Each structure stands twice: as C-alpha cells, then as structure tokens.
Length: 58
Image (cartoon, rainbow, N blue to C red):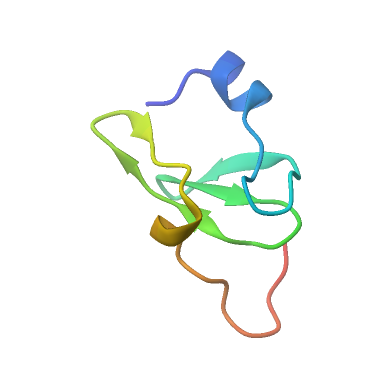
C-alpha cells in the first residue's frame, strides 16, 4: 500500500495536479488518468496510465 506521505507529494506527470489513491491505482484529480501500482511502487509514467472514461473527471 502507498504511504500517505508519499501520496501527498506525488503529482500527475502530465498536468501536475494532485493525485489520490482509488481502487488500487493513483488517480489524477484533474485529467483523471489512472496510474498503476506494481509491487507497492507507483508507476507514474504517462504511457503506462489508463485514460479516463469519456466525460468522467473526478
């Protein structure tokens, strides 16, 4: 699981917005891209992110 202190300093690499932990992924609060977590390590690479569903922004 991702430490809260780490989550507090992470930002979306694309739009630089804050992120939150949601359903085992790191989700951008602005663009809604979902970054995977593998072996408790956030993979904050734009190419690895899941795109948001159309019309859905958190």
